Image 1 (cartoon, rainbow, N blue to C red):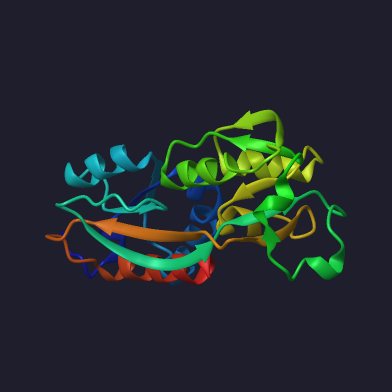
Image 2: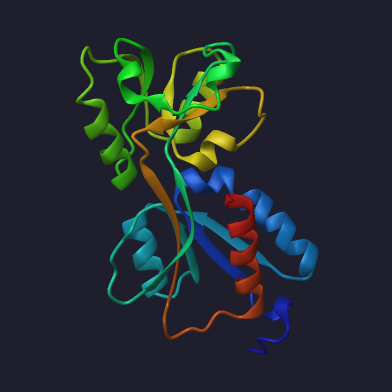
Length: 212
């Protein structure tokens, strides 16, 4: 394969469902502005399956919010953010939007429950479990994107990753960082024996720009 010709080497990317909705479409469009002839194959997988796909050479780049600790893959930090609280428009006074939301303020609040089976989901659940009285949860979802959609429709407050929080119409939800600050890290993964070509490097640059 002639790697100097982008079109001859498809970009094969897999990412977790959370990031698929938020980062992949925009990143793909921006990449194709630089390399209009490139072919792109996108897929979504949870982190464990992603590691397997990379190891089996079924895909070349993985994007995840989880530190997989996989021995045979190279993992690099693309950017760092923090967990955001999101609420329906008008929930918080405008003056408070620049201030972090103390997690204790969620006591007895109507919240969207999130049962994402990853490190971030586990961290959020352990922090929410300490709130007394507990938040009121009538609806539980398995993706942060679905939680954001429900918040935008007035169903309550949710805790989500910063990429989901900023996705979509900026006026559809209010957002504030959580206090205490809970870090969210965006990782890129690839095989150490496969140096990134210029299309793959450009793709990761674009993802980093969008994520920040």
